[in-house]
Length: 279
Image (tube, rainbow, N blue to C red; front, side, top):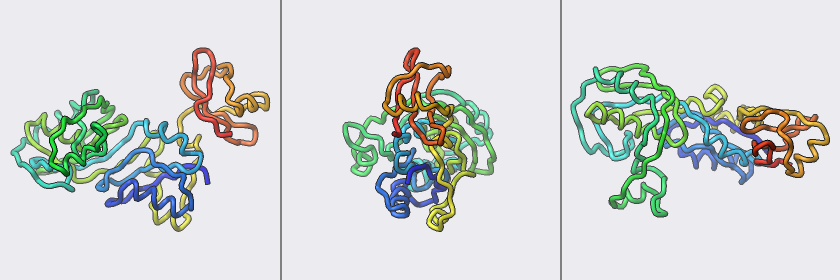
């Protein structure tokens, strides 16, 4: 079993739970997901099986789209409704749309304390659970698109397209801070990752009932796909460098005349060198 399954993760499950279920369904240990979704979150979780695990880092690096909902005026220790309320504050909802739109930018985002990011070899949530103070790291993120979808009383809903490593809980918290108030995430749906959308996804129940599509590597990556002759096939299969006669700018997927995946190559000055070999 080699390929990619796009899971529509349900609320309440961890990403590890999904991987565990996929391992059981397909009777294989070689399974990996491409970007953690919190238990509260739903939607697109791309799972790689067999030799497709070689491309996990490529998919993980892709932009992600979310639809999120939040409640103004309250703050929890986890920045979502899974946590305990730690403070409350008044707010002016008339500031919301302009403030939210101002976050279409690149900035340093503080990683939430309840996350699996490691500091000095220990996961941040372990510090939080033990009541130990720790300086939270900051990561550069880019909010490429953001739009307010609706707002009513103390709740609002928005869509955003963000780069790798962006925490939507933290984005909501940052927007609220800019409004001189608090906000807590109440729901989150990942609707897109890279070129893959929620319309390409299947629930675990559908997958258990054999109602799913196993995507090939070239179907989930947005790199050029080139069919090569036997001469180049032999060189690629042996992991040799080849001339960049195809004018590739980043990476390229090579197949043979029988549609067999040979490898992914990347630019190396005037040449192309192997990034991953599937021989």
